[in-house]
Length: 116
Length: 113
Image (cartoon, rainbow over all chains, first blue to last red; front, side, top):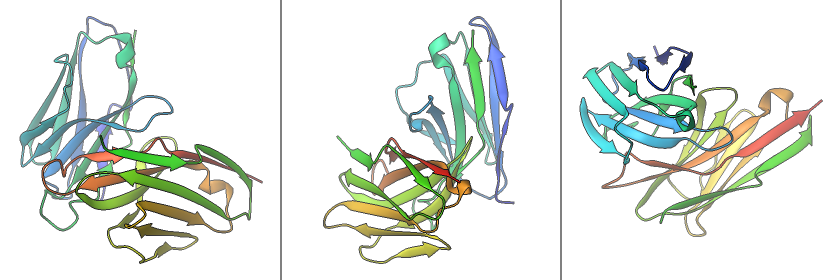
């Protein structure tokens, strides 16, 4: 299994809603990532988990809350978002730092989020 | 500040043409350069380059890295409409910050029949 699976594929939410994006991989990767991608822009790193611990938080607003319940799952909890948060949210995974294959990220298909 | 610059930003070619996409970078503690292809959704991995002068090849696609001049090129020969996509170049550092990939803005390739 060489896939990163993201759900939902599309999400529309109001500014007062609470929702979550989910990501799952079964490749034994111990590093997992959240990226945000706006239209016609490259992906921007939000968070990195390494061995289920938050390793990098790129100064992301607290209305985005990541969670890594186990080595296969990564969630992104959303609360009180703004319309400008509308974007494609990409999950990725890789081998952990120092291991062979750590350089190559495998991306999921993304969750397209629209905030009204 | 780390920089990855891709050129051209967009390109329209006819089927059968050969294209060369460029990626130049300025990063401290360079470790590797990666090329991804992004169609509608997920970027898909094409190549990882760590050593200068060694060409990576996969079918009609090939790529090479020049660590002295700090650039890489991605060549696509005999282009097909299925090659239409955004091609992203990304650079990975070593040491602290090694989880971060710095992406270029991408080159949008359109192949017309």
